[in-house]
Image (cartoon, rainbow over all chains, first blue to last red; front, top):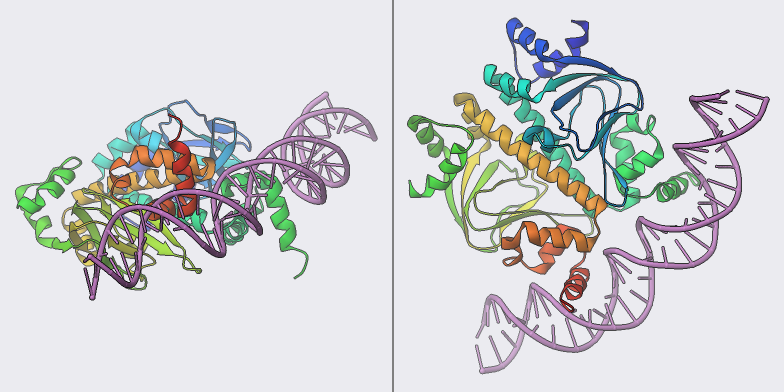
Length: 195
Length: 195
DNA sequence: TAAATAACTTAATCTACCTTAAGTCTGGAT
DNA sequence: ATCCAGACTTAAGGTAGATTAAGTTATTTA
C-alpha cells in the first residue's frame, strides 16, 4: 500500500482509475530494492522490464566500440526508465542501467505491460503522455547538443537537475554532456574565480 | 477519399477503425497543398496544428541567438510533425516548419486532436505508438551526437535517409548534423577520391 | 539572355575540446 | 591506521571542426 502511493498518485495526474483497476495494476508490479552501484540491466540481456523509481537515482548508459561511456539519462524518484527501444521490440539491451544511490523501484514486465494496455485502455493515454514528454525532452537535448557549447550545456544541466549534480560524480556528468572529465573540471574552475 | 488512403492505411497498421470512425477522423482533417519553400509555421506563432505528410518533404528548424539555424528533423511522406512541445502545451512555436519540395499535407487542430482522443480512445494507442517511435528515434540521435564524429554521423545519415540526401541542400544536411557547410564539403571530398 | 542570388568548394588561420600524463585528494577495504 | 583505487585537478601538446574569405558553379529571376 504505502509503497504504491507515489506511483498511483503520479498516474492519477493523468487518468482516473477505479479501486479495482488500481488493485489490478498494482498486482502486476514487482517491488525491488537496489543498493547503490548495482547494475540491474546489462548490455546484451533481453530488456523486458519497465522501471518506475520510487526512491533513489538510476543511470542508463551505453558503451561505444572504444569502450567510451555515454550517459543516456539520469532518472530520479517518480521517473520511468528502461532501454525503451529494446523493451518495446523485445531485443537484447544496448544499454546498462545502474543505481547511483540506494534505490527502490517498481517494475512491470513487457508481457504485463501489453496486457495492461488491453485490459485497461486508459493506460494507453497515460503512456502516450509519458512518451510525449520523453520525446520532447529528448528533442530538446538533441538541439542543445547541436547549438550549445560544453560550458552552456553544463550550466543548463545544473539548473535543470540540481538534485543530480549533488549526488553524481563529475565523470558521469561529463559523459552525459559529451565531454571528458578533464574538460568539465576546467569548465568548473572557470566558473568559480571571479564572482 | 483518394487523398485519405495513405493516412488511413498508416493508422490501420496499429489500430482498426470502423467505417464511421474513419469518416469521423477524416472529417477533422484539413487538406493543404504547400509549394516548395513555403513556411507554414513560424517561430512565435501559436502552433496548434499536427501535420501529416501525404506527399513531399518538410523540414523543421530553429534559430539560436546568433542566428544559426539547426535542423530538428526532415519529414517525408507518411510522417507526422509539428513543434510537438508547443502543440501539446499550446505555446508559441520555437521552431519553423517549411516545405523543401512541393508537398501536400493533412492537418489536425489541437482542439480536434484532444476531442478525437476522447471520442475514439483507440487513437490514444495510435499516438502512443507514434510518440514511442519518435522518442526512441530522438534518443538514438542524442547518443549518436555524443559518440560519433561528424564523418560517422554523415555516413549514417545518408544510409538512413537516402531519399533526403538527394533532395536537400548540403547546407541543410550540415545544420542537421551540427556542422558547418564548409566542413561537410570537406567530408564529402574525403569520401570520394580513393574507392 | 543576362544579372543576381544562392549553393558549393577550397584553403588559411583559429579555437574548443581531446589526449596523455603526472599529481592531489578522498573513501573504502583490509 | 594504512593501503589502494577511484575521483578530481592541472597542464602541455594535439586534433576535429569553426571561421573567414575568396573563388566557382548552379539556380532564380528579370
